[in-house]
Amino acid sequence: MSDLATSLESALGGRWAHVRQEIRGTDPRRFGPPEEELCREAYRAHTTAQLLDLAKEPYARDGLPESMGGTGDFGASVTAFEMLGHADLSLWVKAGVHFGLYGGALANLGTQRHHGAYGESLLDVSVPGCFAMTETGHGSNVQHLLTTATYDGSTDELVVHTPSVLGRKDYIGNAGRDARVAAVFAQLVTDAGSHGVHCVLVPIRDAAGTVPPGVTIEDCGPKAGLPGVDNGRLTFDHVRVPRTNLLNRYGDLDAHGVYSSPIENESRRFFTMLGTLVRGRISVAGGAGAATRTALAIATRYAEHRRQFEAPGSQTEVAILDYRVHQRKLLPAIATSYALAFAQNQLVEQMHEIQTLGDDASEQAQRELEARAAAIKVAATSHATAAIQMAREACGGAGYLAENRLPALKADTDVFTTFEGDNTVLLQLVGKGLLTAFQESFGDLQTLGRIRFGARLLADAVLERTATRSLVARIISGAPSRDSDNAELDRGRQLQLILDRERHLLEGVAMRLQKATKPGTDQFAVFNAAQDHLISAARAHIDRVLLEAFVTAIDACPDEGAKALLNAVCDLYALTTIEGNRAWYLEHDRLSPGHSKGVVASVNRLCGELRPMARTLVDGFGLSDEWLGTRLLEPLTD
Ligand SMILES: Cc1cc2nc3c(=O)[nH]c(=O)nc-3n(C[C@H](O)[C@H](O)[C@H](O)COP(=O)(O)OP(=O)(O)OC[C@H]3O[C@@H](n4cnc5c(N)ncnc54)[C@H](O)[C@@H]3O)c2cc1C
Picture 1: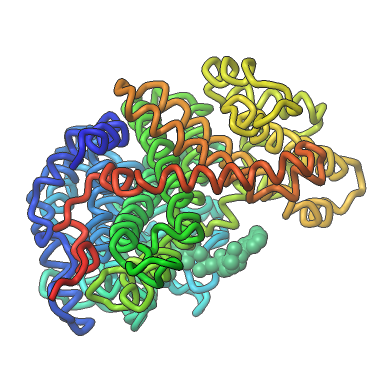
Picture 2: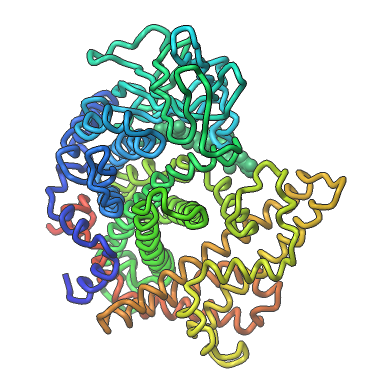
């Protein structure tokens, strides 16, 4: 690997670069895909065995607080998990469900009694767990789950019950085959009434794998991908568990069945509980980023040596990477992957700082983390879906063969846009978060009154708070006017254009939604009519967040050669983003037709200039040939 690629790898490494290095040093076969084709049951057994092997490593322990036998190095744990996204994604999901989701529920919603009782069996996987939130009837709107956990004072137990098929727990990872305990999200009911959604531990198998009376488990059957993950459906028929199985950090029942909570408002309590589980969403973004980098490295390596058609007068066929349209497929996607990797590193640091503070972290910091996590999750997973499909096509028929990994990468990551929050729903969350300046979500539409403010003031306030102001302001202040030649190549001008789109869209949607605050207005109709507008504002916000993360990482890069290359890649990211929104810029008179064409020309030119660096750029992802695990890396020789 060239020195330049090594410098890129270190720029991408972030604060937990040493964890990445450790994992790169392991045998890729250990956590990689099976070496031969396996039927579903055999694949699941293989993934379970890998999970037990993974438990020998320190990374899950890093993700837990000391009260559960962990080290509290949360950033290290999430970074390790991201690296596992270069390995087999079935293992990645299975480990994520057990350690991240089930373990996360225990750690964040439970208290000392659960930490002590379940910590070690979580770490050594002697009691595999699952996270049973989604129901057949509700995936996105989980506040309206149907499952109930009703307190019975005569036995001091909770009775967990599925009232109808719509209340059946669905798609639950690890439930189909292995899990012995489920963290079940249910409406908690006492004599005093319903207290909203809480989480209760319910045994679903004993050590021998026998399912207890009252619990019914069905397998979800074959899926589009993730063959090693045993997704299942759970139905509870008046299943009794001790009252102490309630994960009681945010809502408790005493021995008389009297409910108490440090958070009085039911909705606020629920969103606080969900907020503590933010690490799952951050981890999905990380895994999506890793899988995408694997696919792009494979497709780029292939494009370097794959030849089709001679240029006139030449005896040698042209390497497909020399075709402009092929460069336009791969290089902007690589640039976006760099932007996302930098944004992910920032996000993981932010998460680490906040979660290290525990209860001392401010509510505002927590809300900002949730909003940023939602934004990056949407960006990383939608990029994965588009870029992996593109990489598959960029390898032609060879890309379709399982032995070359792209089909599995495509099938396994497809669902990333849906789980840990559907992307469309998350985009609305990002938009609403911006509009309410990170105050409580107005998802119930009752609190729209909160957005009674001057829209322009709001947009500025939000941008002030979220931008890495000083660096970005400095760069923007040096931007040339829009009329100067090649203005689009100036970083300040790029930032200005991307920031301006976000600001304008936010102001526009805020003004539209203000109408909903007038008495007698059909709030849902006003909100629904502006839904696409809100989502466009959220997307514009994400574009700006990624560009700023890129600019910040370049600023911190100590190697001048790497810095120059990253600057060109950043130009490509910024200009392809602007290019993709040319209609908006023209409609809003932010680009003249001439400058709009200039953007296209600049993207083409940058693709040509970066073509010789394509290999270096994907080598910078730090993936050895063994980790890439495909036959597409070198040309076939006789
Ligand atoms: C392989 C797999 C593994 C999973 N693992 C788990 C697990 O371990 N534990 C668990 O609890 N869950 C799990 N899930 C469930 C997953 O989290 C949900 O599928 C997800 O939250 C989406 O919910 P849904 O399927 O009900 O879709 P819906 O919410 O019904 O969404 C369907 C469509 O409606 C759109 N939509 C919904 N609301 C709105 C709105 N307000 N405005 C506009 N459009 C809207 C969405 O964008 C989407 O296109 C898993 C799912 C899969 C497929």
